[in-house]
Image (tube, rainbow, N blue to C red; front, side, top):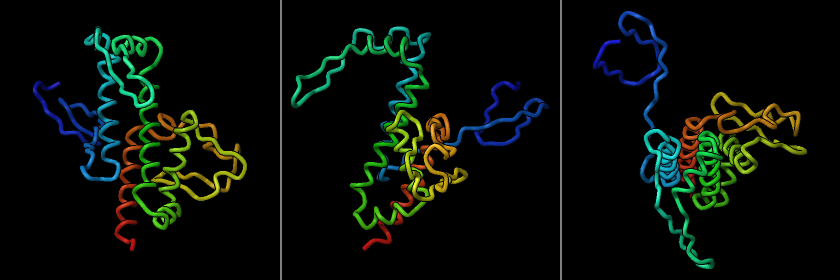
Length: 212
């Protein structure tokens, strides 16, 4: 390997020291200030970054040791949480990927539900006719049901797809190939969720532009 060699990330074939290497690069992704889901996505990034010291016991063995977190209450009294003990508990009882799945579930839920405050009834009805938005709804539903796609009775009722993923609405209930499959780290991965939310943001922008 050549020393002090800087590679700008992309996806493709790179030649290093005369040898061909398959390299899958990380594409840049940045939340756009002012976009509909900006606050949710930035919070997701911050929470995801926080998982690094939580689960890196080698470099952060005593992460947040002796630190308390105060969570104010209006009805209940302020909750005092021992954050160091919470970190140790997570290390013992919660795998990092499962923690990441929980964050994805919260992100999908929050963004989907926020649409109720971003578009009026007519625009939401128009969005509900768009297969990509309906796919986000299924992701949100799976996020609320143990990270599992679950169809009952005549569900899914309408066509839903996003990019290369097609959810066949003609196959109902347990006969649907998605039924019972995990959503995050299953049918989709975190980067897919981010791109799906970006595509839906563009749909929201179009709905606003075409509205009254």
